[in-house]
Length: 493
Ligand code: NDP
Image (cartoon, rainbow, N blue to C red; front, side, top):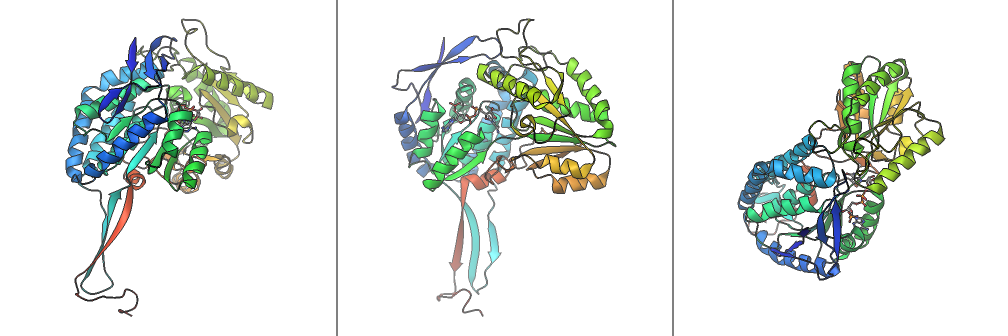
């Protein structure tokens, strides 16, 4: 049986706890191996190593730090297929999507390596003579990264790469559900020559290891992606400790379809966004806001496409929809389906745990479509995180905007229409961090900011240059070469 251990200060070491947690394949329940279960002591060791290493790393010129990231990028590229196979095996998403996710990490590695020669600050004219004024980015220190299972390498890359290129050290706790890919990613950093202590991997539960990362005085910032419940807890505690936090949490993303839209295109976009990654993307489309004049036509097109979706093990290239992550997720999804029925929504497809055809050993749920859903129903308000989509009929764009914005989340939204005026209204009025036009709610590219408004986050963004704002402090520098003490705002007025 494969055994995975922590990576602390450049050494692969098991926790002294002596406890191990099994990793299983959600497609068939097969035990893949075991992972060491760490304690606060392991976190402390990792933080001490990170602190020591970070002091030296901050002095390494950023282009030199970036050279290591270029090697990381090339190694990721070389091992893309191998990593994708690990991803699908422990997380379940279909192999084509797993390859896409690894590609995201590759893109992010090249992009952030490029930042080693940018990391732009500002130079501005001073208001005083013989004085120079500029701002530079400086590292924050030791970053604690807490990541989820649904994008186990993409999200880890969005956080670790900008952290490292900017001169920070990292203590990373991956999700318990996806430990193997985390180790493969760390091995790549190791092979690329990242000095020891700069990236530490600590396996364990959120309540022990995650919590210890938040509490540890040597951790200067916490970057988290996951549920609102945990994110709010982290934010509260880190706030008391005056630590910087970057939180990326849930979504209740909607595709709006107006009557002038290309309905075939819209149906494709809905099916891809709602059932890709088995509905477990934070940007998954879980609401379709449809103008009532085209509701039935759109439903028929989506249902036809849903009928053709093949469920199964994501390693099978012909499969469209893989399993959900675990049994409790399966039960939660089914619970929401029952809630939807009790609330009076009309179910047009799915609604059951999928069995037969070899699915019984895995965690499969039938792609499910509800219609005549009201915007205030729980299935239209709460994050289900599974292959369930709700059609909400509306009169016009004004009502669509109101419904789109009626949820507590603000991650992603989209509109299908041929009317450019309506496009621009949606781009202005949809209150989400990401808006797509004539595309589904998913498909973020790494060189733009990723994140959301309202309950989705706390104002920070992953990926893009914006991610550097999480991992750097601004330092303003004034150099007076006048040879006298000049008083700003006083001597010049
Ligand atoms: P969690 O928020 O529970 O987990 C995310 C990460 O936080 C994991 O690494 C987890 O560790 C860790 N964690 C858990 N509890 C704590 C804690 N008290 N202190 C510090 N870290 C902690 O999300 P889940 O993975 O359980 O998914 C639950 C729901 O969250 C989903 O159904 C979905 O609604 C939402 N979600 C949203 C995501 C997004 O991308 N926006 C991604 C994943 C989930 P461990 O794995 O050990 O529990």
